[in-house]
Length: 149
Image (cartoon, rainbow, N blue to C red; front, side):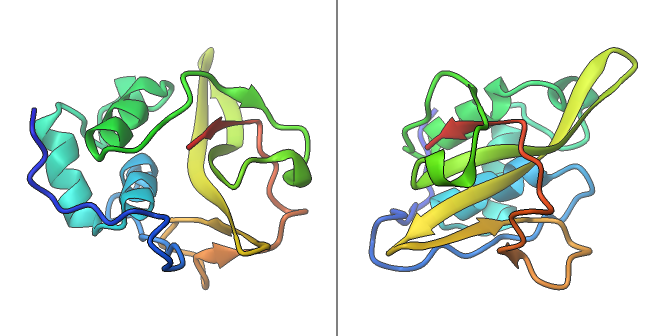
């Protein structure tokens, strides 16, 4: 499927900005939008065209849909999840699984983006209820694993 969107490269010299999720369970779409440098609405349209919907509970415990969306945007995505060890050990760009928990024998998490630009480390969190979507309160976040971008 061809992508008609113009996707801005994350390495084009501009700082990455958070994209706030417009749906309660849209953190994967919002993270993908931020990584691609596009709006939530643009990412949602592409996701929906690929059969990816934020409210599809079957996708809440999988990583394939986010990988598929990021690849559609032309981004390179690691094929594996790497256990989180420390903030210093993270690559310069990664999708992090935080708030990881199990409900009815199924894992759930919230997607955020870790980015290190010109020595400045931050987390872009799409959660609408946050006062600031750029986070540096690393001690409060408890990542389970990450996917290198």
